[in-house]
Image (tube, rainbow, N blue to C red; front, side, top):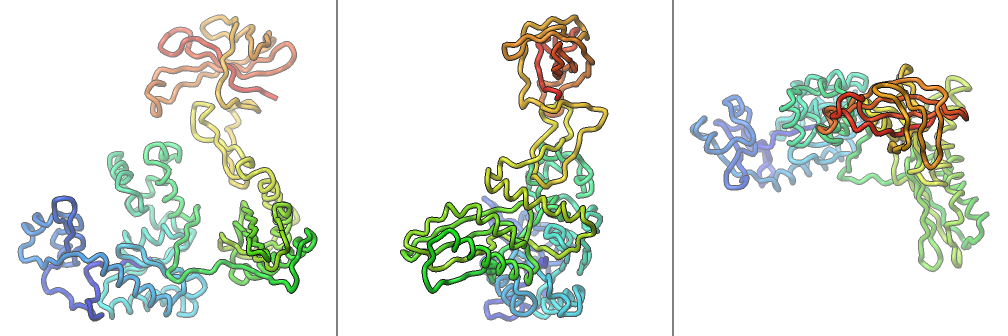
Length: 497
């Protein structure tokens, strides 16, 4: 990430403007007033900052050199710099408006003597062109952005394992959150990213929105993030043209295997793994048949890719024949080679293949895991996660039923003694159950910090077993003494075994 001072730009002739001999600012209109769009280092030391009203800046610093902001000219200069970088340092460069550049230096830093020497060369080039810049290198895009724009170092190199530590002291604004989330952090007294990272995720999502969690994950490398380079990357692909059109499913299956092997070799050469693959079949009548498959994790296993595509051969209508086929990885991720340490690890590596086969047959949304969430209310304590994601189990002392109903269902004809005795009988879904054994109550209070109407809510849960051996998880609303805690109605919330 390379942020550049906006007021140091090339003029219309392409020459660098000389350093200002007096405080220099640029201005732009916001509504009915003029505000500062950029300030030079000298003006910043005098107390001026971006967003300050121009009248206030003039009162603080008489004799300002004031010029109108030219955002289109700034964008043009940034584009020229990005094109220069794509020719000179890395083919993958992009503009980060209004005053930054993204460089993907994976695989090119060693050509310049390492990351630090490459950064020094980039900064020297910027200084010769009349620009002031800082640069940060990190494995995660969010960490590079935070260190380049909010860090104090001119060159910041951040190893992946130290990303959390390096950005912990930076303000929440360094995460690229919107102004509303930044204001909310300020109201709650959260002054650093480290404080945000230490807080439970569920309350963070409720108070600041899921966008903040996404930005936090991007900063520490838990969520992948890509950018579109000005010189577009061509998706890894493999293609075959035929002397004679093919019609049979057997021939299509054979070509799919060949294309998968060719694509796997291309992916391996580029250090990538496919996450989404598209098969395109060009018919002799000009029509196209397409098949798209998704994968739960990046892979370049040709056998696995071919098996997933072959499951969907019946969707291809060859018509009068297919004259060409193309297989492209329309979505890919970096994937490094690794050696299996044991036979157990080899068997674990087969799990993504199994999940992919099931998901592409019955639907991706039907394959998931359940993981626990920090919440006192049972129906809010679990959520769906990816089939290969890490899950969090219930604490052992909190026993929960095997089947938890999505919503508690009310039961009727309940016989129970107050204030804290289990039910002796209840009816559910038209069937009466007589209780033989019971354990409880386990008292659970409402989450008043989430919902104001739960300030006094109380639930008393009981594990009960009826005469047939069926076991249920029931609760009564209210503590049996204070009517504000509940209306004493009974509900079933789960089934054991």
